[in-house]
Length: 286
Length: 345
Image (cartoon, rainbow over all chains, first blue to last red; front, top):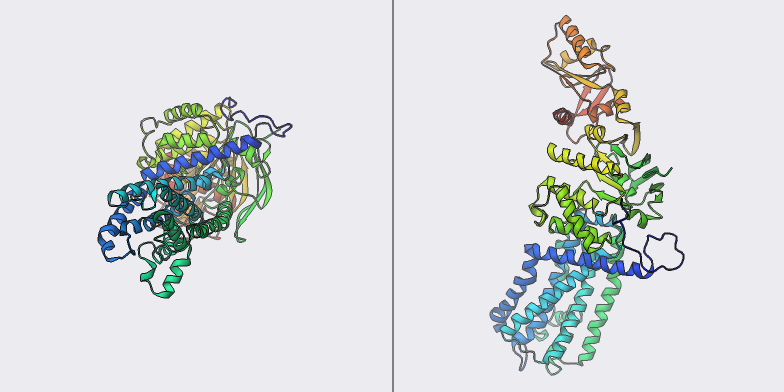
């Protein structure tokens, strides 16, 4: 009675296998991708139904663009020949995808707390799907947030000083960096005992990195010791690289490719350390 | 023969301290319901988590339809369905989306999943609620959806971890009818429960677990025969009178009576006959009962008979002196357990 629906036909036979009903080789990989996409879809649907996450991915970034553009912007001098909104966009991008990552930590902590991951563990799905699906969904959310803010930015005067190509390159860079950060948030979510703790832990780590950086204020307006930190910490480095791509070399001292290399190195380094750590935490979290 | 589920000497200790399973063995025949009966913290859920591949045992082996739950975990996962004690469904998704997700993660095709979702929503009376997010569901609806999700891939072996805890009587009866239907169709079921009545009604055989060990095993009727088929509760005006009554009634029942507060609990084989005898004896000694009722034995009574102690609740302890003179500890929660069992029978 069960044979009609219990299993999809296995992939092409790979010689003698002990258990023909189990997937091997290509079929196994295909299932892993399909499972990750199933979880991605589930997380994206959930985001549209949680008012807080809708707020943090839509209204809040818009409010920040408007707040800095019209309220604080007038008091900040971004440097010769540069309007504040052009200066601001790189910082706003990092801030939105950074704080958005807290949702990754909270979501995973909730899945653990509510027993959903227990159910996943008893299903014949790929072990990798929960983390792969979560980070993919959050990458999609980040793409959406960047598009939304680009639209809002353009409406309030952002005019792509280094052309479309530079702008797109900057967006890709920030998306990659944010993707690496997501694995850090995953570690927090998988380690915290509940979603509130996840939030409380993630926020103070993120806050100084985002605000003690050139995100909203030029480095020249900071005291020397802070300037050193703001320049060299990862988010500061990524913002500088973004600006060199978005604004062009004449507004950012130093070579653009040099800045981009430093930012990429940070991203790859963070990913290389935190992704295995998250996977390890996931395996241990029963 | 190959059993649907086999547990052999399962052991699990958490954090080096808490011994959740201390050598649990049992076997579940195909197309039957097996009841794992025990109080909170007895180790029921730990056994289920090991047998559903979620947790690795520290010692012992488990298998599902002959496949080892550790070495062949992937294979086992294609054969089982699990509905947890805490409804593990995504409350941001609709009922249909939850079923679809679980179906897709079982690698069923989109068409098959869509059809199964319609069938299951219908079968569990959730068709109207199928496209609403679970946040809007009642506890009973959520639980039904949780069980439905366990059935999407038509598993041959189903694990139900306290599927009716916290449900109202109607929802409980619905879940029971559904489980019986599945077994008629050939599904094997491992059911954990705190309710003797539930195990009695559904299970062909039962293992009673306490502190990570199986303390009794058999058919429901064997267990109850061991105990006395019914319990006669005789309430007296105060504790002192209750103890006097217990002494008088010592030889009447199937086993010696227990005093719980002001009530004498007497396991009996032949309820109505013993009841008359009890009333006659009380009358002879000029004792007037304030309450008097015959009821089905509760899990608490089974435990008392098997272990000489009460199921542990989490309320304040009160010490009671039983008729054989030993001091027994019991929990105030017993009263609640007794009431709920009496109400449902």
